[in-house]
Picture 1 (cartoon, helix red, strand yellow):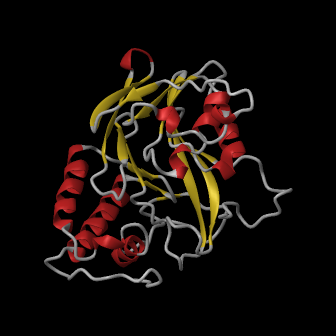
Picture 2 (cartoon, rainbow, N blue to C red):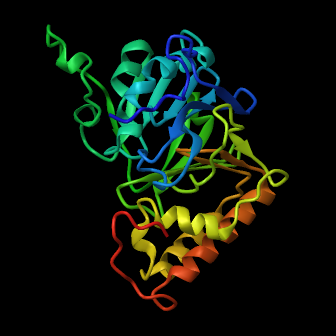
Length: 303
């Protein structure tokens, strides 16, 4: 079992992780610290320090949408974080951006038990079957587990708040290994990128968990190494120019002041967003099959 807690005495550890207000009263990052010691597959085996798993709460009045639900190890913290932001009579929709990955789905049932969850957005007809992690469905009394599924297409505008007060756009991620959605929130000019742009972490368990152009020194070589030593190992020698085109379409279409990934620091400010996207594009250009041949990668090879 992977230890997702920071290196603190469990008895003394806080029950709730940090809640970062990214946009006043409208957007919150529910963050839980993870120690990087070679056992977290979302990061290179040689990465050391700390990162956070991010669940994002998009709030409009007394309505909200939660993007991802966090790991089971962080259940208590996630429930407390949501309760610290939502009013008691608030309605909540849950949207796992990767319906087949633990960080997205593990706590959906627990959240539905605690809060007024009115729907689960999913590309699969019965979301309850995908988020079944031993709550109501496995209880001794075997009560039926009801969770309304709202089907979403590959590209679709959803609404947060009464009478469509706040549109958010959901679409298929331009770069992905598994089925993944990205979300764009026009109200805060934020792009939620799931497992992309998750290459920022910290030396300290206290963060910081946001980064701006003033304090960021990430290089294209760092991004390249991060991609090739995680789930995007297959990019080297692939048709990455096609991925570059799709990525450019996203960043040309939307005004983006913040990139909010599923892991790591949130990238804040137009200047840093543009710099990070330019570096990401340069990495993809250098990895295209017209530049470098594909090769077999040993599981222990660090690139």
